[in-house]
Image (cartoon, one colour):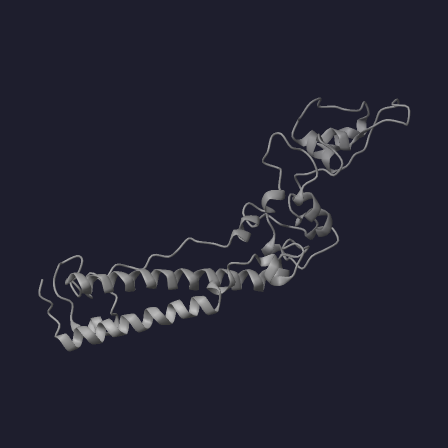
Length: 246
């Protein structure tokens, strides 16, 4: 197939492609593929990337995300350049892959590795490649959260965070997990759902003496919710004062 470019134009475009390919390969070799051959722990010198505060490694995580994007861009660029050089050898360089019409020299000079004319240039696809360290971000608390597993009920990463969070944080109601926040006391993660030291709600308000006798009721928030939801017996203690709870 006869090229629609002159010999001088084709030589100039080929030289441009080779120069850009050499520049990319040299850059990747010099920066060791943007340092992605090493783990984040090795790069930062941290014994563990999991700290008490998720912002401690935020900058490092952002840089790693950026490096992945840059590396992916360079690798994709090399593929397109190699494809363009192969097209020159085969004699079909500068032909649109969609309409099969010659691409203007001015466009090829600006983007010498393109396979498309201006009209049929596809939209850019956003990559979904992410750093492996982000696996700890979804679901919340990453691999240390055991709430969704039926075979686990032990102390996990979420419980550890709840203890730390109980001492206070810089969060505001706008940053809380729930959306119906009317008090800073219920901002903590699952603050209204979990009962510390208990499995069932009634364990938090049914009490006995040291010998297991003389059952009594502690009228706390869980007790009031238990009655309001009409769970179990409607009347747990035989005194008139319990009527005030309805």
